Amino acid sequence: MTMITATTMAVLLKPMITAHRLLLFQTQKHTSIIAKQQKQHGSLLVASSVRQSDNYCQNLVDEFDPNIPIEKALTPPSSWYTDPSFFDFELHHVFYKGWQAVGYTEQMKNPRDFFTGRLGNVEFLVCRDDDGKIHAFHNVCRHHASLVASGNGQKPCFVCPYHGWTYGLDGALLKATRITGIQNFDVNEFGLKPLNVATWGPFVLLTLDKEILPQQEADNTVGSAWLGSCSEFLGANGVDSSLSYLCRRVYDIECNWKVFCDNYLDGGYHVPYAHKGLASGLKLNSYSTKTYEKVSIQSCDGGSTESEDDIDRLGSKALYAFIYPNFMINRYGPWMDTNLVLPLGPRKCQVIFDYFIEAHLKDDKDFIERSLVDSERVQIEDIVLCEGVQRGLETPAYCSGRYAPTVENAMHHFHQLLHHILKE
Image (cartoon, rainbow, N blue to C red; front, side):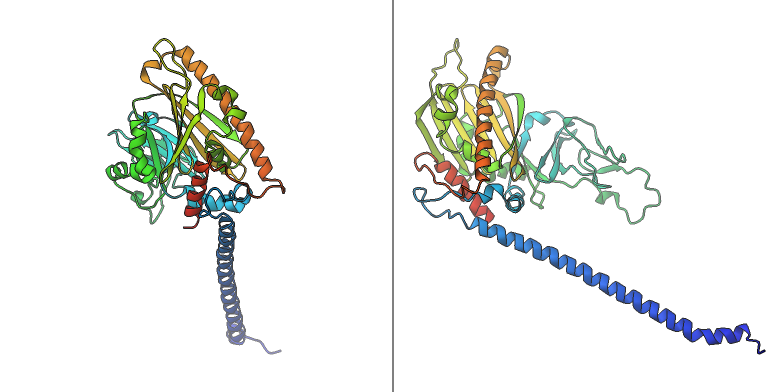
């Protein structure tokens, strides 16, 4: 029997081992190429899907013609109020551009005050630092995406509840726990991501534009950008920081956010039918509407001539300002309330009411309580209307309607603004 030595065996096996390694390398390379192609194909599919969705939504946008005079115009199609794709399209084109009202200076009048909120899928945090400067950030921890803060209040810093990463009031990362051994990590690159913030009168505004403006520049330009030529008019008609903040009411409503806006903008059309108590305190034949660049002003005389002994909630004149796309300011008698309409889904929105009163009445508890009860009644009546409209929009019986030309021009103006921004 011939004995095969180890050396001989190695010589015999070498071609086989080499061939096996070559086959393995080619297989791995082929697998890698396939994986890369699949990834590229997946990215192309996503991009194609996005383009198809955008094209689909643009076709829906084109179903409304903003150039037809209100006397002949149809309202936007029901798909604007019901289609999930259109809702996502709106978030990016309407709410993620331009200045958006999100809160009040009263919520952060002292150093270390903060409040949080959500706009679409954007979680935000607004605070005032120890030097009195206002900051705004994405409310998302840079470690593993937990929300850093919730609600409102006072904090010397923000500690993530998940793993304890700590951020200063200026957004800087102050402490990252248990990261011994981490590499390629620059603490200066892991602060909270900033947002543009500005104030106008008693209001705090954010914009999601990526270019961060110096605070002074933001405050100096926000009035004209947000209100256009209407800013001086509102300031001269009692919309200012002298009012005392009282309270907040929040309503979750089963309707598209635009249904609530449309209801607000019908020029008092629905008031004598749906709000008989409110109608009794207004001279509806005096109702008038004026439109500006991004604002519409509805005004109406009240039935009261106020005296020191008999203060009426509505006063002698009521002013209703709609600021595109989703903010309302109502100034009447000694009161101001604001309505912020937040889109939550194709058929759901949240409306935040904040109430202010002239300073000399802030301790008149009986008057305040009676007024808030009257206001609550009107809101409940409006909720019933809006939810009924949403259900009607979702039926096959309705596509588009018509405008009442003498009263619904503010609504038509709103729809024209929407069309313009959705076409950009």
